[in-house]
Length: 283
Image (cartoon, rainbow, N blue to C red; front, side, top):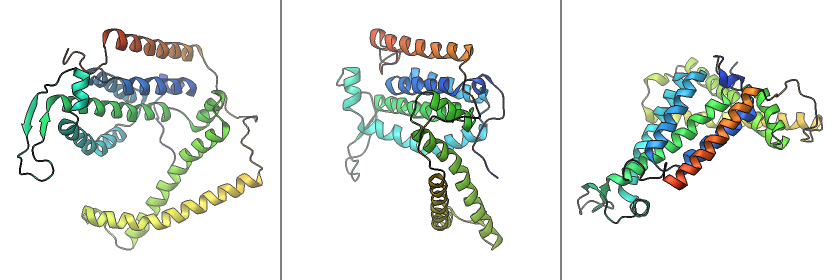
């Protein structure tokens, strides 16, 4: 039986209340979104990545994320290098950019375009932004039991219907993955060797999985709807909970630390330009 991904290691992150982690994810996401410098963005990504490893997030998961995202990141850097001209000119307050190479004029569609250094650097900034946002999610979600998430979100005054949908989604994904594995195992028993197939054949095989997977998912969702209706589900948060959500002194210290970090980062950004695109590179 598969279950939602959680960490096995006990760390400071597993002992934090989920409300503290919600604040952490919100602060880190906002700062990563606002910062335009690849220097500060890269440092923030490195800190979040190290925190994930310290919290016990599996290295296999992180490597899978990197492998999946690398093609998109390469594409982002290339596209930014070619097309993101006016924005970097505005950010640097200059009309002159540093060319790396130019595409021959006779090339279809992209003929005459110039790859510029500043655009590629801004592309790195986008890479670090998205990577930070991707890594902060397992740091907050994987280190928390689903039941503790539900209670923590209710205590944070999030509408219970939203909390229920969120928790049901987290519980539903492992069931879908189990269904996929079951279908693939059934096909292997019939002599289908996925390991020996080309990537195009694999795509066609996975496409055939979609139909039974969607049908089974719809059947499970309909059963859940019947159960909720039979129990007169109202979406009210006024109910008893088996698990408790209590903010400890450590939680308050972390909350104050995140709020202070947000305030300092905001002041440094607007007053001294720390985190702005030209900072340390083009200043």
